[in-house]
Image (cartoon, rainbow over all chains, first blue to last red; front, top):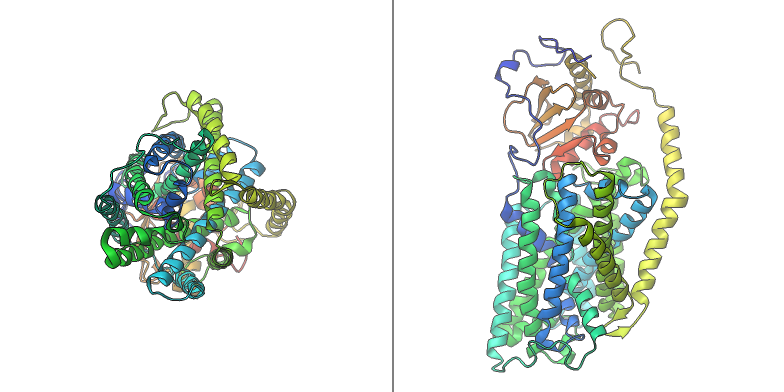
Length: 491
Length: 121
């Protein structure tokens, strides 16, 4: 039935065939009117990773190694991030779509396990949004010299603005995102260099991370270091809108390099010029700014911290809410989560994400437990990198002939290595907070995982059964081909 | 496989429903886009424009520079235009492939969903 009858059909603009371009399966946005270039891919990848939480994670890392040598675990973590880059590069090449994580996990493992892991991983987005709201709120409160409780008002206001603008369909344009990210990175670099040079002290232990610390501390520092790169891979959800498909893996690679430079510098600078009290505060970046440029530096870093939230809120809300929407439309989440407002925004996930982030941010503000967020985030990121390694390994076996535009060399050996290393790092990160044994992050992850598993195993079958029942009662509209006469709805 | 005429007939139904849907017209306010459809099995090509909150007639072939490219089987397109197929399911299973911004992709899915909300899709 591949007949290609000529002549206009019902509802077809006549005589347009002659002006048409040849048919081709266009992929990768080559010919799209609005496509993302490499610069925007780099800024998206780096901007998503470089959240405000980055400063606190960097300061926290100093607790595990002799300060000036903090760049070493960050470098090791960077090499591990390159390993993850290889996995995501190959998987994204095979599935260049925003739904890639669903596709490659579904094809690598049982769908129930895939969904459980995915929902647990989504916790990271809530944590990062909550953490950024808390950090920006706290930083602005400190900068303005207001009492601590005012931070709660900032948090409510920031998340309120983020939810409102998302519901209105406001998006940060690629150009604005580029400028914001590069300003954040540039300002952080300049402040870090100035803080170091103006300290007038030589580095003490730049090549000896174990000075006064154990090998176990170094491993924990590496686990935290992995968190500094985390979310660089979220840019793979932009695979459908890039000018060239290879921009994604190239952009991620450049992003890892940029993150290594900026994070290493800011961590070494913090360890060099800040006191222990300043390092464990909720705004070490402000004190770093003050060390570099006095009061003006504090304001610069307060502004930079606020700008980081632009990328986090924009990327986090859009990525999470659209993923939840897609999963609900697919039938794996309740259909209420696919409700759209008049601006075609899935408002239930946006409001839910905002509400959940607000609760977490306020709990953190009250308890001051942001280091727990860092540990949970680090463990979840290491977990998803281990999962990516496993998917790469499985798909090499299950789909050996599938086209791989980006092919990781030595993938099997590297995937096994990645699986072991990232699993170990996930475990280490989940039981340590601020260089003290603390099972709270593990408890949070187990709770999130258990809730996800409960939903997938007990509730999802009912959701799917209800959907099946609804479909069974829906009349098919498409006319039967065997029916005589012209096409007509059968409703 | 569905013929061009079947797809065109299905699209005409989709278009009529969409253009008559007041809520949908609000959803596509200010969203003027060129959408290219490409079938994988019959290698047919179609173009649809959204201009002034209305879907245009279907044009055979790819015309203009697209904002979104939708690639799938002729059967899937036919079923989608009739409202018998949930395109998100096919998208999440990798059977429908999209190129374009997430924002634009959302709008297309919104059209396919809201146009048939009265009877479920």
